[in-house]
Length: 331
Image (cartoon, rainbow, N blue to C red; front, side, top):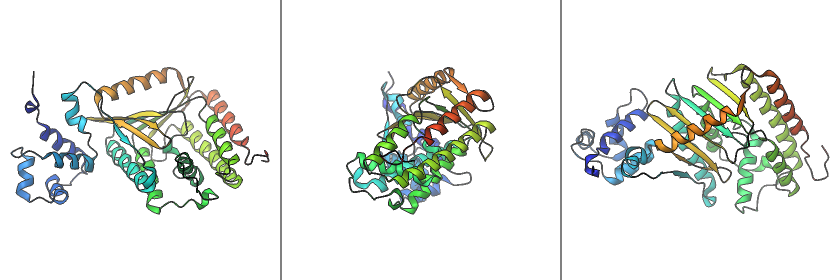
């Protein structure tokens, strides 16, 4: 049986760091800056003459968004390893920003490969589609705050103060997905029904105002217009392929995977805005296989199945227009 000493984790770490650096950026100079080490100390580590310390490995893995199970876990365990991106309700904006930045770096790295691919099975509106929509974005965060007992909330979504850098990071994260070569959305057949019921419920509780709901209706209709254009064209405004599927099955959650040459990641949405992910091959392959199976039970409406596409968007526009902005049911 091979021991841990037989595995050269330093080589795996160096390879992963090189993959994540922009073209033309020198790894040695980068490590000198972030580890505060001299030139010779860095080069001894890169040549394998001196091993990276445990603290250095952990720090570098976090800095470059490298999965430790990718360079170590699969070789020492048959178990699965996951990374939980949890937003702490005590420091929600800072933690939310860090979570978005984490996925922005990963998806930007994936998008650099011209053969990159991403698949998302959605039982809610996928986050990648709505950072440019002011009220939908604010509602997402507002309902999370309410669920975490932040009962003192602004009277309207417009008054929910969001740091500018957080808004910009949301847009950057969405743009990183738009740059991926091929993206597939597989929609649960009830993707909007539960969302609409929830909006009306929170309006009745006075968590959001009737004016908020009217503005959200406008943005939902705009989002459906955008999604329909994507389905008709089969690509986004950057020329990247976009495929839209309608599932005949319900999903218990929203989950997906993304991959490029020598890299893959799968992710699962939990607790409204939190998520956990894994870069372990065993888990990613299982996720990929599951989503491929879902596609067999779905109808592709991108540049095809025109009748099904027209019906889907007509039904969902009708659902959005049926939202009652106040408990008395006045439109």
